[in-house]
Picture 1 (cartoon, helix red, strand yellow):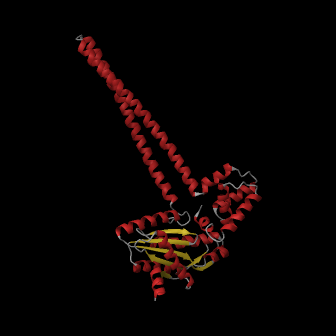
Picture 2 (picture 1 turned 30 degrees about the vertical axis):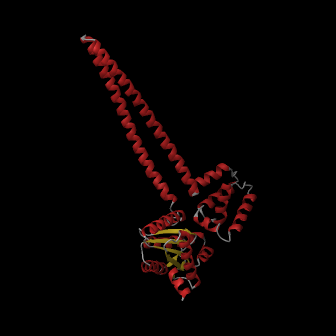
Length: 353
């Protein structure tokens, strides 16, 4: 599922959305298979998405919505299905190359055996004859055998070179597929899967090396109002704008990700609380400094603000606990009036006072 749908199905709206999806499938006489259910969740929850628009077009034509149609839509629009198809295709190419190399190696092995037999026979013949004519024939036979094995060896070398090029291209392609699978298509930031993996890895490294990590969770204030007033496409424009600012703030080794819906996350490896707070406040101020305009109509959307909560990882703290503290700090920012940065450590100190 895309990040937006993943977020929705883990919210209070989930059961209502699921019922609406099932009702819509029943009305369209569509079997509620797992794949159809996933497609219809997208169709109901994100009606302006490319997938939903294509589904609406297909349904409007009255064409049968069968398993082939569902698989076609999934392959084109669902990231996991696209990745699975890419991996299957890569596997087929790799199998073809391996089969070709194996055949070339078998041919070269046969030539080596034949050449060995020819050498052994030539040795025997030369030992048993002193006739110059026979010796000439033996030398000629050896020359022919040498030419054959040279040709087969050259063919094998060419085949291996060709396969090396194909495998290198395949490796580059799969690396691009892997990057695409770890990237949020709307914002070009890391997606939730990539964020989860990176956070877990960095927590393990920090635990082993005794280094610090800062983690921020960021929420766009009143985002639902943008969607309800201006539509999802304008909401997407706001998401891309916020993401572009966070991407500049979170240059490597920092990592910025779309955490879900209108939420983002930034990981700050080996940084102090002051450094993290300064970067987050700079992003917050830059985001709020502009009045956005709707691209299609040039209507003034006003300023966008964000609420931020961050935490520094404690020794021995699991990634899930780390996230909970950052999320609690984000909640304090939102409850305290929004458009602010709150530190989990400051919240804890205030509670202890």
